[in-house]
Length: 153
Image 1 (cartoon, rainbow, N blue to C red):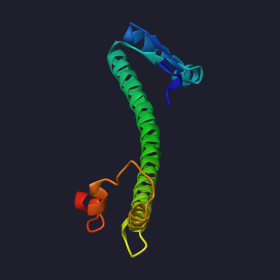
Image 2: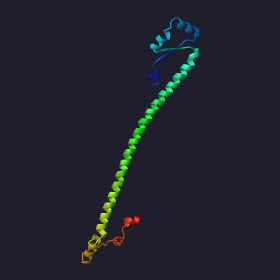
Image 3: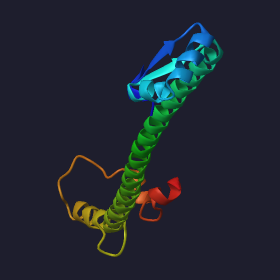
Image 4: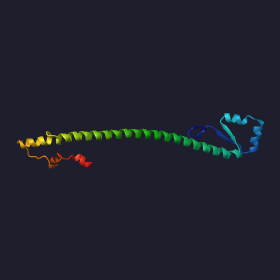
C-alpha cells in the first residue's frame, strides 16, 4: 500500500504553485518526474493537488476498511470457536441430564418396584417390631403406584 506505517504516507507531495514553472522543468528534464518518484516525492501543482489529496484520503479510508475487515474476520473466528465450545458444553449438559434421569429412575425403581422394593422392606421391618419414631411420608407410599418424575413431565 501507499502506507509505510499506520496513518503515514511513504511519500511526500511537493507542491509547485506555479504550473508553467513545473511544466518548463519537466520539458527540460524528461526524467524529472520519475527521478522524484524514485525518491518518494510526488510533484503536484494547482491542477493536481486537490485530486492528489482526495486520492490520499481514499487510500487512508481503504486502509482503515482493510484493517477493520481483518479485525472483523479475526473476531468472527473467535466467536465461531466460542460458539462451537458452547455447543459442545450444551451437549454435555443434555447428556448429564439424561444420565441423571436414568440414575434417578434406577433409584426410584429400587425404592418402589417389585416385591422386594426398599419401601416395602422398610415397612415390613417396622411391622416386625423395628423400634422407630419416624414414619415414611405418605407421599412415598403413593409412589408405589405413581412416579413423581413422570408426573412432572
